[in-house]
Length: 499
Image (tube, rainbow, N blue to C red):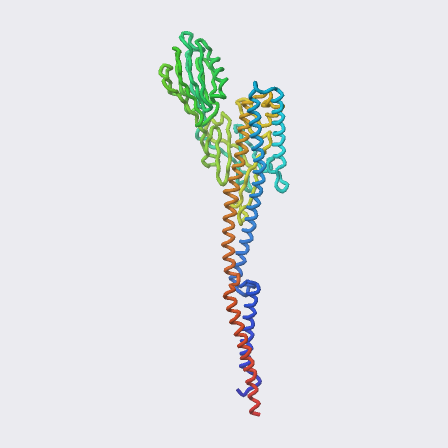
């Protein structure tokens, strides 16, 4: 080569040196940052994909945090209910002790009542002070708001509902009525026959137990019914005398209720036992058995209500319809009139409320779950209807009709039993929410986070085995390129030998 103004070999070597230095810098950058993609120019498509995955990871991280916060929320509420549960058990014991009238002095009863008053006050305090981040949990703050409750609905409990931006109407379609168990005793007169040679003795049974009754000749049917009613808490069977009949009915409704009648000694008493109509326990049914043919217990069973709530098949239990689905979990307790009929009934409208949690990566209705927590003050716990009055837990106080000194302790115990069922039922719902919804959600989200992190890492992170090999290669190539550049620059000096 004899030209010196343009050293082409040097220019080529310079370009190669620049490329090798850039490649070496890139290797050093990837190894120092741990990222294969540091800017868009490194891999445009990979950058887009990895940024989308990073966004998903951020949403999943927030969702996991939400689920963990929901678990803490539920644990706090359940802790308060656990203490209320223990207090109700103590009240149950005190009421049981107070029922031992002959064995307790008035002072002891008053001491028991003082303890009950203190416990009721404590229950109210727990209900009003149990809080999470300053928000009360057991005072009804997170109960569902319901308007337009039908007059035929005794109770409408909403445990869970997806309300969204519009109200949710709750409608029940009753396809099968609720019925008592019942029998008619036909005796031909308003009193037992005076021609009978001995007492009329029969055994009466119900869901609560059995008892044997004995009546002499000439006893009025009204007195027979009154005696049966005296022990209705023992048998679960009540009686009404009307004309020549005694109507026997279970005190409750549903498949678990029954009335059985068996004659121990007929005493030449004339009459028969008649089953009630399956569709209406106030009507005489088709089956009648003469007293002389009663060789085994004649039995009639009650009937649970059946139907749907908002088109979803509901479970019937006595006069109560309940449904549990992703969209709605509710219980509708109907009064006797409505429960014994069929047809469509507008129970009420859910307008809002409930504790709402977003447990998914996306903020939408599908990922939002709600949980209803009612008011657990004594005035709202343990509702019990005796047919004419409704009682609550606060009626066990000193000024209430169910107090331990001179109150109705039979009804008091039923109120406590119902209160225990309500509190334990709410604890069970909270536990199911914590285990089956929150716990499962955290596990699912964690697995998704791991998989998305692996996908993002495969796209964006540096493979150090590959990068270090590339670094060694680029270092050799840079050294070689610099050496070649030196040779190319020295070639032009050969022109001096021609001068």
